[in-house]
Length: 441
Image (cartoon, rainbow, N blue to C red):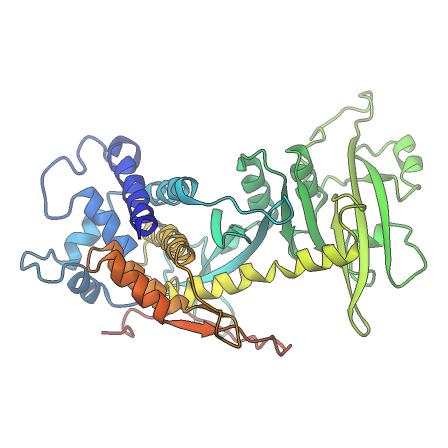
């Protein structure tokens, strides 16, 4: 119970820290939130954090329940427009730093990297996120790039991009460069992040990567190597990367397993962007293993990693990569349970506010749920917490509508069995934003 109180106190402390520096987070620092009103800065932030899937008027009725002096929805919109989106981003990061427990797997911290598109209300006035397809009505997309701790089940960092300017490789490099920890860490990513530049950024901070890369028959980095004549293999390469196109460089690059030419069209941050013909040739050393193994008959997976072969044989790499799926299921909970699909404004600044607010509330719910023990001794199956019920009661606790005892009792009572995976194929369906008109009461 004390731990539940501590998590709420940490979130309130993060909000208070931002509110104590309005000069850094308001559009007009000399004017905004200088007068006493029904909606001061901290109340506005807590209101946005408490949003669910209802219309704005019904959200206000829930949050200000029993208060006859409830502000109007229009007043809330005017007040939140004064706050910069960086306020919610800093609350998310500070709260995560304060409360994120350090959990390791065999002495390593496991961080998964992935991205997900977010459909937002249609807004043609935002051209960077508005997509127009022939014979189809326009729609708006944002792209969420996230860094997810697989052991503590919380988001550590995020980069939000508008769909027309999205770049997952650059977002990953930004999050890697911001990562500040001396703990040995493994960054795990899918095929979309296959890049020498991403690997180099992780190598430069002294950490480890485990990337799935495209197979031999695809147009990926694997096609540039002289591979063993076997279906399954594990071999090491030590590349000297250069962007110099001299005759010497061309002759060296014929040794495909030791030298590689980086063309000007490819981004690589650790070689000179421009050089004269007389300049000496620059090299960047990048060492890693390429591991190919079979997962089902006639289907193989290829991984690139700089983890040592003696400590991480193929079976262990296979297990670590399988854990990456946790970030996929977290996106589902973030969108459908926490409510990231339900926005309360078309304005780009408000959308970014709500994205970081939902990330914060996801972490808040996961941390509280993790602090409550589930007894499995007398059951045939292992049970887990019902995340939907936990998110609902944790939100009520944050808004002050229930006690820690009630939170603990509800979460312990609402549990679900963990069943074995059936191996069903993924059913991909098109998604769209939820209109303001179709919200629950």
